[in-house]
Length: 353
Image (cartoon, rainbow, N blue to C red; front, side, top):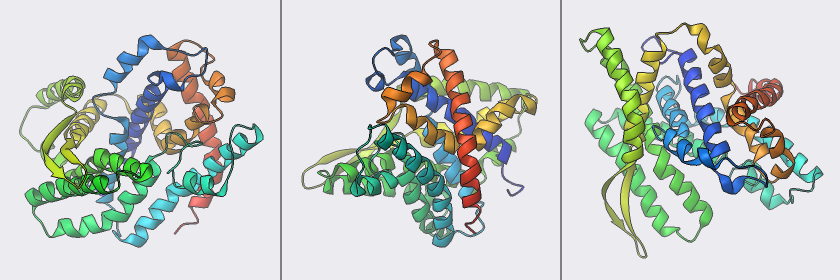
């Protein structure tokens, strides 16, 4: 990465590792409707819902996607398609593997139509937590256009145009396609998370993190402030997750336009976290770095324990009983699965030049 990149590759992997663990906590302990009989953690449901509110784990991945796009050498559609297939290939391999397991265990009804929808994450019987796939495809296809448009505007115009116009368009489309569940699902996730991608892009484009570093303030005061931001973000995100900025009317619907404030919380959290993380020996983060490097595959693999085959595999995941031990076991188990998948997928991805 370029020298002016505030977030190093190692720190990016640490962030991904943290986000992945937060995602596991959220998925494993706050969806009682997904549990099979005999598994329940009611005392954790409220706690985890509050705990995850400083930022949605997905927002970290969204922010990093936008942030790192600035450093792409070729901001072209061709390059975006390469990035898309570098994620789709591992996704398809894991999906097909789990689909075969579902067929062999009589827990999945295969059809060509289902296969096509599953392969684009538009139906998620197999890869139940992977809506991000279609989201990432849309992001990568649109980012070359966003990059070109942004070059013609100043910072203020970029913030106003690139953050608010896409969300407003998504709301308008939602009003048009309100009867189509698949399209509404896509638009809801774009409304919620697309601005965070743009926020990451703009923070990187205008070198905001390094400019914060250049502010003349004693480092110890900066670190105290970072700690305050980190802690207060828990409360602020919980109390004020969205902000309204108007209304839009379609033939059948009137929408209150809202902006997900992860566009603010995500960069504040990431900057503060990195500053505080640099206080400690890098060796402490080796486990997080390893998890971060395989975070995408670990995101995919944990679907096995919650998908159509969960009656078979969920008891394995929750076997330790104690919530902390279950989390540790989940990380170990999914890391092992991701490691094995990576042996195959990494070789195939390398073929994309």
